[in-house]
Amino acid sequence: MTRLKVWTVIPAVAVALVAGGCVESTTASGPSTDGVQLVQSGKLLTCAHLPYVPFQYKDGDQVVGFDVDVVDFAAKKLNVPQQVVDTPFDGIQSGTDLDSNQCDVVAGAITITDTRAKNFDFTVPYFQATQALLTKTGNDYKTLEDLAGKKVGVQTGTTGESYIKGWNAKHGGNITAVAFEDSALLETAVKTGQVDASINDNGILYDYAKKNPDTQVSAEFNTNEQYGFGVKKGNAALLKVLNDTIKASATDGTYAAAYQKWFGKRPSWQPGDSTSATPTTTSKG
Image (cartoon, rainbow, N blue to C red; front, side):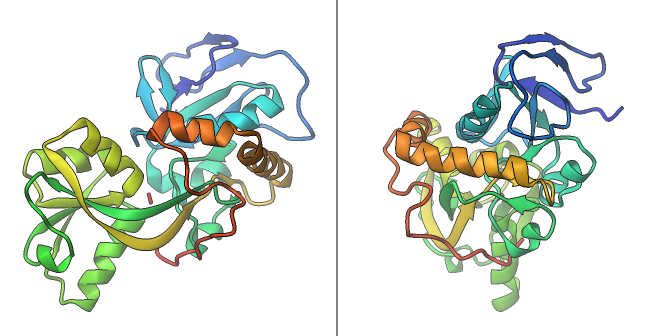
């Protein structure tokens, strides 16, 4: 059995932990669901790579975050609990986790790109983002030119990594990109001086800088990105539930409430707004 970490999001059912970190079993009640076929009956399994604060991270024995709350809109519509499966990001963006039935949904601030859209079906956009630069307070790097000859941390498999690679290709490769497996390592590398700066999505870096005043977000780069959730190719029934609940949350106030909860302000954009990003061809971002 694949050794995956699985966390209960809504503890509304009895949960039996299987030794070795394998998938949990649950008992759920209520109707099953508008024709949606789930990988495991009675639960909605979401693959995400932890931590990615504030989108999804472990708090005690639960996984919480903005993405968790938005996927919960669909779980509640289906009358099942959501459970988060912690897996490497490569299996998420490649569609492997969906194709191997590890989960029903992939989530985690996944930028909608043409390359990824070949691997799985994206929902409508649910979040606008851009790339940002995290530095130590006082290191006022405003452009990538300022970082020539410096070390810049990137998270493996993300649009931030692609952005640095693209910049290096155009400017002679004079930034040393240092790859990290997850965002926590990436952020800590700035704090401890392993790198001069790190690049990643603005949402998580602003959250980190708020909690770590010896760091700051010194610049943003308008990469015109939007996030989507993903389902297995052809899973039209589940895709419809996700799309319907995302759109409904923008009109009934639940999206704005979740955004306020996790980002401390009202959203300037909501699903369905006319301002939209063009999918980028770069391939968390």
